[in-house]
Image 1 (cartoon, rainbow, N blue to C red):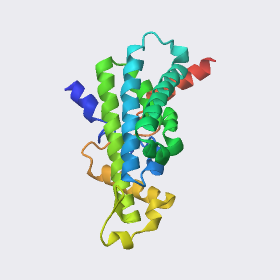
Image 2: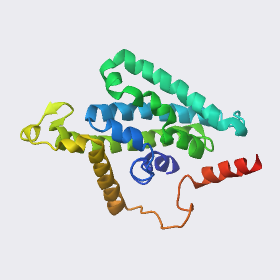
Image 3: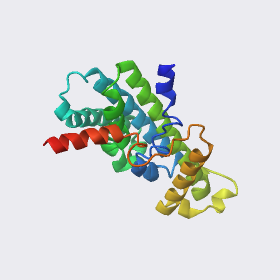
Image 4: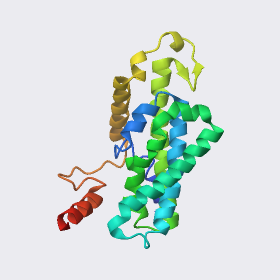
Amino acid sequence: MNKLHDLTKGIIKENPVLVLVLGTCPTLATSTSVINALGMGAAATVVLIFSNILISALRKVIPDKVRIPCYIVLIAGLVTVVQMLVKAFAPALDESLGIYLPLIVVNCIILGRAEMFASKNKVIASALDGLGMGIGFTLALFLMATIREIFGSGTFAGIPLPVLADNHISILTMAPGGFFVFGLLIAAVNKFSKHKPKKQGGCEGCPQAEACNKIKEEAAQK
């Protein structure tokens, strides 16, 4: 049951985009097209899984004082490998994603899961957590891209749709439209989710509270 929870919590209950509101920049930038959204989601999922595995396996070896730089180096290495594979086998996708593919290195979802979960749990649980968060991220991107491409461009995965192709709402493919759809999806998840978070004041309700407090303590000691 614990392993199933590790896998499924990132899909709805702790969806990194629609609940934790992480990775907003690549979400808004790459969700104008379904193909771009799926490509970004797949790349981020691969990096999430393998970064969680490596960080979990090395959690007792990495010194606590330099853990964040070490995590970033590991993540950067994985992103470089993924980027090279995309360039080799999907050059059109690499060109479409542009700078947002290498920027996976600084994606808050990946670094957040490394700090909050992988550094404290075993390899299998960390791999399942990375897979679940990656699926949740991909689903959020897919939902946003589907709405924005169908109604904003009149196409789906680049295929023109009858009627909509000549009567599309162009603003949905722009930044304001992205924020509008993003807000609607967050509202829908909050409305229909069965796992509504308890209203708490301050940092108590934030899933990143533990990591923030730890960083503050280290800064105070310095």
